[in-house]
Structures are given as structure tokens and as C-alpha cells.
Length: 222
Image (cartoon, rainbow, N blue to C red; front, side, top):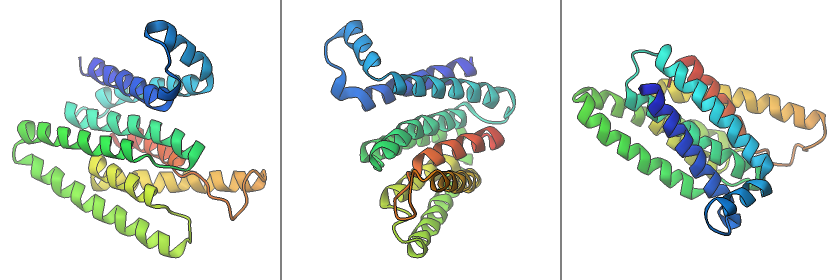
């Protein structure tokens, strides 16, 4: 039953991502308009399909491997991954972390916080403390990074890490950031070697965050 809930949530998030990313082209009504839009965005449809499979696999792992996780905790993991799926596309195409998605993440985290308050009782405050520490740590690290790497880290990236901290807590966000930075390093090297980017050109960070966070979720369950 838990796996079904997580897979259903994954489907809803992927559908919402598709609508958000293609809303300008969703002309017409009903199935015909949707079919036409999918045809216009075959690459995006394939990407979202692959992400849905990934989220379904993660749902099974969360249920079968991380048996101590609560349903709310697992829903938080899937929700964050769904948000990153959307953000990765906009950052890759436009080098923008959309405020709409950030706001949606904050609102959803508040909904989960209410659920945790009613289901965990006093244990909720331990989660709240971990989230607060992770947010502060992530912000300090990234603000410090902006002072060292000029134009390397944007305000959008900082907002994204803020949301990650809210969802993952101290252990989860540190693991995700470490792996994301590792992925970003290898991506940057590959782009420089193939001369698709120069040292002065910005490289989208969110796609690396998506990959690094997904790997971290499989390894830590958070």
C-alpha cells in the first residue's frame, strides 16, 4: 500500500512537471490537446518518463530497504525529487531556478510539517531542529562559495539548497550536496574537454543536483 501511494505521488508530480514546463503549448482541450503537446515535446516526454521510472524504483527501495522510514518521510523524499526534476529542465535551458517551484516546495514542506506534527508528536521537534540546522549550514556553505568562486553560485542555487535542507535534514542535505558537487565537477571537466563550454561560461548546477540527490536518496533513504 505504501509503495502504491509513493508511485501515485510520483505520477502526480511528473504530470505537474509536464504541465508546468509545457503550459504555453497546451492548446486545445482534452486528450487531443495533450497528444499534440506530447508530440511537440518528445524529448521532454522521454526525460520525464525516465524520471518517473527512477522515482518508482526509489519508491520500492524506500519501502523495502529503509523500513524504519515513515510514510510521510518517504513522501518528502519523492516530492523533493519531483521538484528537482522540474528545476533541472529550467536551469539547463534558461539558467533559471523558477521561484514558482521554490514556493511550491516551501508550501508542500509546510503541509508535511503539519502531518509530522500530528503523527510524530514530540519526535517532530527533532526533525524541525535537524531541518533548521541543515538550512543554516547549506546557506553558509553556499554563501561562502559565492565569495570564493565568482559568478559560480547564483541566488537561485542558494534558494534551491534552502528547499533541499527543509526536506532532507542535516544528514540528507550534506550527502546530496557532496554528491551533487562531485557530479558537477565531472560534468564541468567533460564540457571543457569537449569544448562545449569555456571557463567563463556558466554551467547549470540543478541537473547535477538532480543526479547527486537521486543517488544520495538511494544510498541514505532521505
